[in-house]
Length: 351
Image 1 (cartoon, helix red, strand yellow):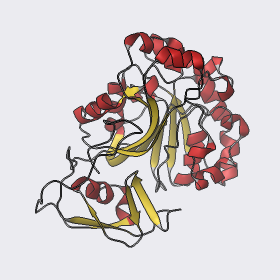
Image 2 (image 1 turned 60 degrees about the vertical axis):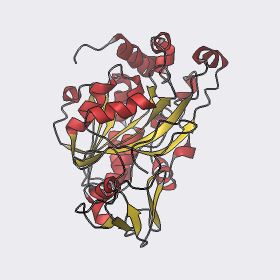
Image 3 (image 1 turned 135 degrees about the horizontal axis):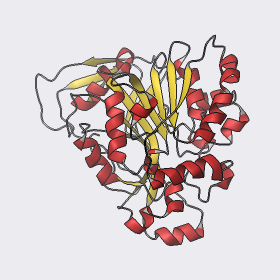
């Protein structure tokens, strides 16, 4: 393992040794509840060992649809809840890798491996837990263009080098691959004295990403459009911490972004349409790409060029019929960027 920063070392100790379960958290930021989970994920969770479930430190449900047969990587997998849920979703022909820096968490995840595989009816494990740094996934043996989907649940904010994290994600994603993650964001830049507060950092507030900086970061590494799947304001529920953070607005968002060379930095109209075929498992009547794109089964919908690419150049291509190309440009696509809760600069570039 390469040298890790003081912040990462504190986080490793906090989640590996200080916290016994999520009741030890000092704020509500990472106390993920079943309210964020879809019914089919809740059903899978019933088959996951209780020791794993008591150590879920998350702020959303970043497990996307249509992952059967995919290779999925969970950044900051902890005790493995999302890894095991995804293991069931990818099926025996898929594979899930969990990466974490805290060996105590990985030990919990690994000791339940045989029991979980037996419970899912798999003859051989489709899961591997590895110790490594999310800023350098080579430490966990993750190769270029080797992963279909990257997920992460309230972990990227903990990294002191987020540019390195996102650069690594897009390095290891296959063309057309997806990043889907839930994390903590802020309506303004968190001042340095708060980013250096160890407790605030470990509680996922000190390292919260300012939405404007996040948008610029993704643009700089070659991803000009991302989509907000869901979001809500955080109620910290700790008076001392609330007094310390002052007027900073914190909220959680679940984000999806695709590794596509065809994306533009604005919505453009090429006269394209998309029809959802109703074939995504668990979504027979409609499919939500994000918080403002709901596709009704069988109903044609006008889409911008970026949305067309997200539906036709990714694993979703078999679930949609996308018509038209980019031969003729009709000007800007008439839509408004998605917004995070009570925040004016949070959305990706499209409708």
